[in-house]
Image 1 (cartoon, one colour):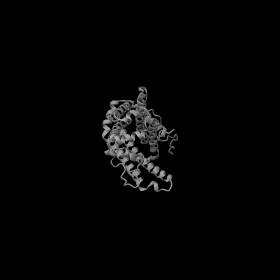
Image 2: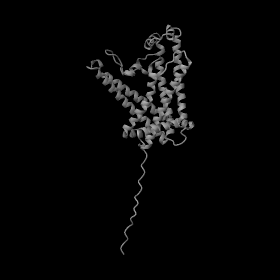
Image 3: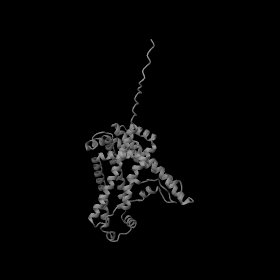
Image 4: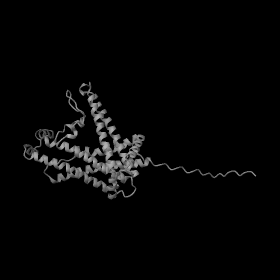
Length: 342
């Protein structure tokens, strides 16, 4: 098996991530605290809205369908959940109904209120936190010693934080722009109802989505290998790291994209499993609540481990590709020069 094969790189990334187990636990605690800071005020707002309403009694007994409960709550207390139509537009890429004036995708997305608006702010804060931690992991993966040292991880995170935050901002802005122009804006070029067959509309949506995902994957790879390059060189040279990353990805697009797909699937898999099979707490048994919390914590930890392993695999791939082959040894012959004639 080749040293730079997909499976070997994935295993090396996982091993590298596990050697930084202290940093993984620190990232888990930070994410749990951030999730609590978001969920607590939302929980308080929901309780204050439901305690003195007829919905509270219905929820404790035979619960209504979720869509019906959401519709009633959004109508009576729009300040709690906020306007979720912008989130629907993100999923569909549609900025308006047929026959109405369509607006640009993501228009007014940052001006939402309620839980929907708070989710946007916490998502940006979570991305910034992930960028800082990614700088620390990149520094540890680029080092050959003290990978488990939490002090060294903190020093690397502080040293690479400005450059890593700039890279994270470039990735976030680039992906948002790709969504808006590659996926969202192209949806305004045609009306699905005007197409002759339904499969044509489905194919166009899938083609738009695939084009957006390819652009987003390229941006993510560019940022990832730039961080890995900074960790390998030990210098927060943003322009140099981006140049190295761009050249590296351009020379090996298939292998880099395969790693992106592999670790992307590994990251999405637990979320899909939780969405379909995850338990729901009914508010009665404390043991069931503990099971839900442990399951959610396991999902969060798996995603942190997957992202760290992906960065470790990128660092290993970059190191392997930049290794200079050893110079071949000169040939040794046993034949001697012919003696000069006397």
